[in-house]
Image 1 (cartoon, one colour):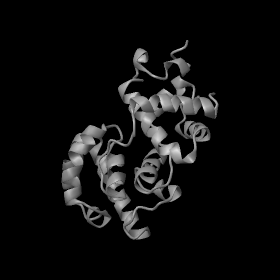
Image 2 (cartoon, helix red, strand yellow):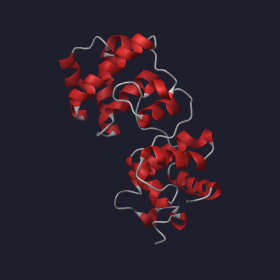
Image 3 (cartoon, one colour):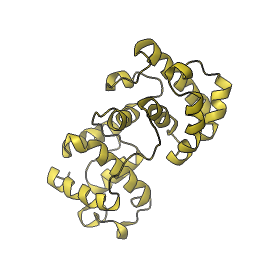
Image 4 (cartoon, helix red, strand yellow):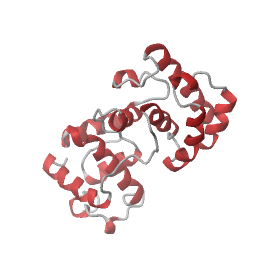
Length: 208
């Protein structure tokens, strides 16, 4: 495992590739980011961003989404994949928001992960980007990049989240995740472009 000082050096190298890294999902409110992140499961941010303008125009908040016609909702989100399950989760999420949280997205991990279709990754995305509460979302890109770099070891997302949080200051958690995600999409792909990577001299995988 890298030390916190080594982790900071690696992150600084990656930030040169991806300055001011942020989520690529387009949103205006915590509710919109919650919906978009739920839709991004087994899909791409680009595909979700193509779907959400029409979706948010029709269902801008929990109060409208809870009344959604199932067929209409499924049609709007069809291209994101698993649309039937996602539609059920979205309406179920809206029902709980209306019943238990006054229609607002709760700024609390435990409350968020009780919502249908919401796990720690989605909750951390919403907390960190829309609600100002540091979180470190771990997706498949973060798992791959963190393990290759030697920032974490293992394929359990919760364990890797814990390992990464121990390496970075809390205020850096959200942006560290965004940086690792973008690096995984652009450079540290399943077949990595190691020669392009600013962190290759600090990377366990590249130094094998």
